[in-house]
Length: 412
Image (cartoon, rainbow, N blue to C red; front, side, top):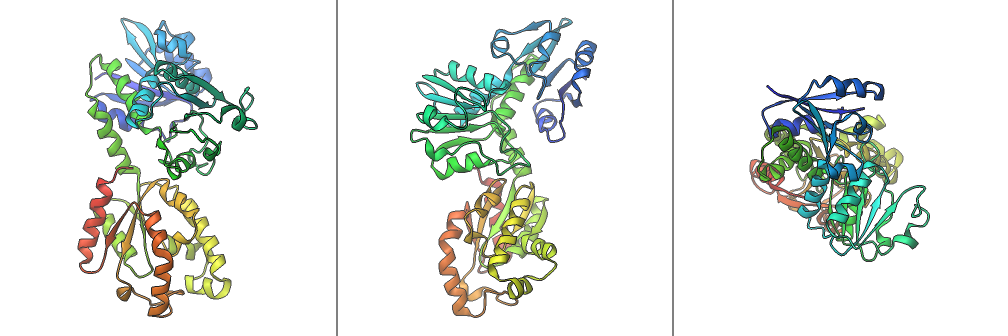
């Protein structure tokens, strides 16, 4: 069987092995290399072909026999194929980025494009923008003519923004390079980061109603085009979306929100049997962190302290992937909790008639009238947070089935 690989410095979070397993019946290894080992690896010609990732997309070029014109122009190679004993370099990141922009319906032709970053992927973004007919291309970098001190003055007319930096990538999920509300003409945002699925940059784009996409479509599409070079045959484009959907379902969290006593924990635990994910109850995590029960936290420290602790827990739990997460009833009272939950999750509001809500051992559920008032205050926030809603008034199993069905068919 033919052997292929991905080379890079650190590959422990790479999706590539999984993607290539879905693209073709060939062996695909992850090979971590120090820079001093790069030349020896290339010259051994152990693999029929290999992909190249950070930080070797430029460094690989001197060791190749041939580099195609596009990769030469970009100055970066991410795919190498051994043909008749010669090592030939290509840049399928270009094709992947074109696919991602088209898939998100982000129009480049005639637009002013602002590229964040000046590394190898920035060069790819520039080449793509030129290929797609951008009116003007601007580069924002720390020490460039357009930088983080003057970008609002010099690039406020940007219509499309492409982030090619790793800022906002796990575990630094809460970082964001620029404030999107400064760009009055902005129409589209591509962030090459794909973990988390929704970076802070993309979250801001969503809030502003701007077309946006993360880097997963680019990653899968470039792998598909690389696989075509490996195998020397055309592959169906439908493979790309099928793999994206599969990866999303394997990594996305299912998040349950709703009033205390609506059945989130029970539904969440039952849903794990269908989805094969780990269950997390954020209230249980809070109690463990505080060393007290939630009623004790409310009694001894007050609600404000509890909400602060809750937000801290959500910011950590939300970074995880492939979980079913049940939250406390008041998570929607703090706007910043939305990003914590949404960054890797599909959020479902579990609705239950107020008269049916359980109220035992719940600090804010003192009596039925208090619960009704609390619901009226929160219902708009539940709706704003949620991707969908499921009613849990009758059959618990029916509610679980609806939750699982919504989750499995949801597309961001």
